[in-house]
Length: 350
Image (cartoon, rainbow, N blue to C red):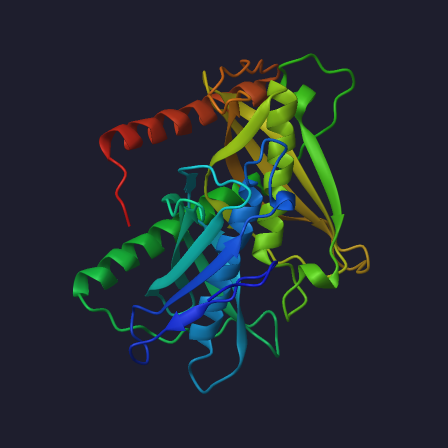
């Protein structure tokens, strides 16, 4: 089924009520406004497509019971690797599948393939795992129960439960960052954290929001990727592309009318990659009873490319303060851990 220009239209395949292979597919053509100056599709555009696919399929599943109507809200995105660049004129094939349900959450796994419509060549560009919770249409703060799925093998349920417990623990561990903020610095030196750090301010309007009046997770992720890309470009002064996104945690809902500040800062550089921390803060300017709060956070990894698309060395980050040095070492630990994981586990095909 062909999706709309700015939306994802999913054809959902059911074999039976509650069956675990609830799936959906969509196709979208990539246009010039989806890409950077080098013709590579923005990582944020792909993240937005992934989230829309997950939101549609999980909302449909959560409303398969004859009970209270709801909308599925994004709670977390696991690490997402950008395995191959997508270019203007290519067709994005987005497929989504519900792979696990707990009492109050849905796990959706999404694959993105790029197709060159002139040659018919297809490449896997992204694999992502997302977690959604169903929120009542009558009460946005009420989380409803999720219809269970039937697994073809007992191992599927057990493996899904392990993933659920792991992401639940990881979400709790990120809450300590909620008080951390990015402060501007006057006349920063090149290659320092302060030199490339960037912020974007956005007023949340109706087109950004769900039926509940809070922001689509995909809209937030696209803005986060834009800020991370600006940080990376300022640091390298070259063409840059998203290589991966560490887990994105949504700490709280962002409502219509809020002013959100998306801040990014460099945390770590290897020889050919950069890690950027992105923090999203929401300010309910029309509600004096609520203070500014942390809404989302994540780490983005970028690489620098030449005009021919070849990987370039990255200028090494110069951490100045003790906090910056601490974040650099933490980023180095994540980099080495992921590098060891990639070397030990060859990439599997879907």
